Image 1 (tube, rainbow, N blue to C red):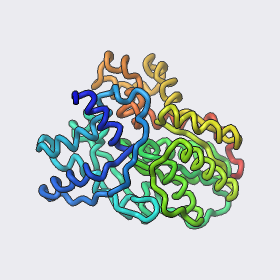
Image 2 (image 1 turned 60 degrees about the vertical axis):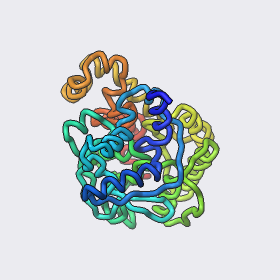
Image 3 (image 1 turned 120 degrees about the vertical axis):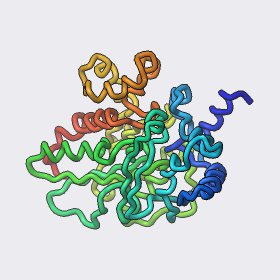
Length: 341
């Protein structure tokens, strides 16, 4: 098997935020334990989801797999996989962050940031999510916005305050003259619509589904979205669909339930790509854009435009999160400011 086909096969089976093969983790765990790094690995049933369009053509796409291979070959310190120690097994949803944790981890999906030793802070609440302590009741005068998703919504590679969910909350509260906007982000790397459905049900104190596997077919994806939308309607809140990084067939699969149920559905990848031209002309966040242009160079960015706004053509970088927050604010929330939810 050639190197290219081998990497393509590995990518289909293991991608940070898409799939987590237990056997490979077990091998890395054994090697890391010899180094003294304290880790807890989550063993999940096999998951396989189509890789994002164009991602397999980007060198950064294979960085997660490459990290572990380099660790096993002693070419990288074990600390490069320290993000794995953030998680623990959890009933129903397979895994969550360790509760009340504080971790500084490397951005393993971006080779340049990894080699530069840059780290992000991941803090978890008592429920195992990267958000403030979850309120048990909603006070009067509060409009709550709940985010569900995978590593793109979780904010892999950026600080918590830089995520599009948190930026949206900041902008809404700054513009509001009445309501207080309360953002809750329950996304985690690797979570699918299956996990989102269960997290939503548990968050709303509903009976969680049991006995299902997290492998998500297109039909199950549609059913999960429909369930999430219906759960929202029954409990008095609206669902908005925004996949920042989604395979084309899954992106198309969200259209039918969104149109049928009459809810907003935005294409996050299109929003990010649409912003690139203004970034290239220096009309949008020029200082921040320069930080990404300098290490990659003009030639790489011309062929892989998404690297202006993502770490690996999938996970939004700081600039990408700002763009997504702006899209939500302008397209969904500006006309609803101070309107009670």
